[in-house]
Length: 139
Image 1 (tube, rainbow, N blue to C red):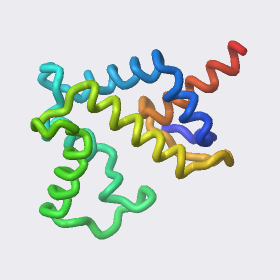
Image 2 (image 1 turned 30 degrees about the vertical axis):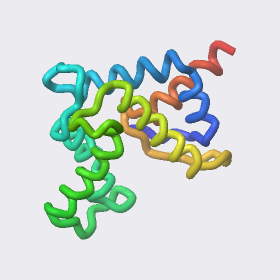
Image 3 (image 1 turned 135 degrees about the horizontal axis):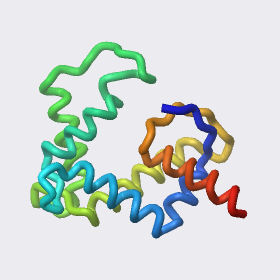
Image 4 (image 1 turned 60 degrees about the vertical axis):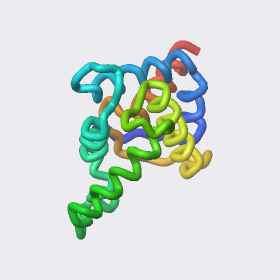
C-alpha cells in the first residue's frame, strides 16, 4: 500500500487512455479468472470482492459485520451488476464495462480537488496514479 494524491482527472485520464485501461482490465480479469475459462463465475468475482473488504469495514476499521446471509445478498447483487446479460457468468466485455462505470463513479465522488488516499498496489486507482506520474515524466 502507498499514500497517493489523486483527483477525478487522474481517473478520467486513466479511463480515456483506451490501450492502458484495456490492458489493465484484461490483466485483472485474467488474475481473477482462476480456472482460465475466459469467464468469471460468481465464486471468482465474489472472492475478489471479499478481498477488498469494502463492505466489512468502515474506512478500513473493522466494525459490526453484516451477517453471512446479508453479505451473500450483497455479493449476489454486485455480481448481477456485472452480469449484464444475466447468463450467470461475467465475460471480459461485461467486466470492462462495469469497471469503467465503477471508476467513473469514484471520479465523480472525488471531484477535482486533490485528495490523499491509501491505495493497494495493483489496484485500478494505483495504476491510474502510476500512469499519471509516468505521463508527467515523459511530458
